[in-house]
Image (cartoon, rainbow, N blue to C red; front, side, top):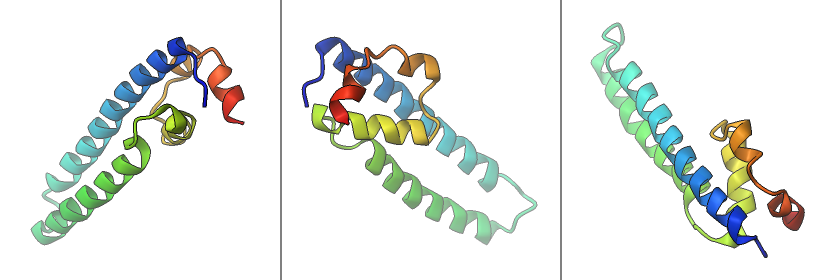
Length: 101
């Protein structure tokens, strides 16, 4: 895929910010659940272990493989997860989208 250099730089920024949002979201959810003393300690521990595995799997699915050929797919995955604000998406020239279809 031929991505303009300006779009590639913007995509890299978007991806970095989206990864931070993803990690923050996952950590907030984990902290909220594992510190909820209304739930039994064993259930909180099991949640922590499972949540960690699922979050890591999802993180790899969305963010691994930093290449121009995966940029469109990763951008769509980030949007699907609500990790990209509309104003960030609008910074792209549109060539990234046209070249991917």
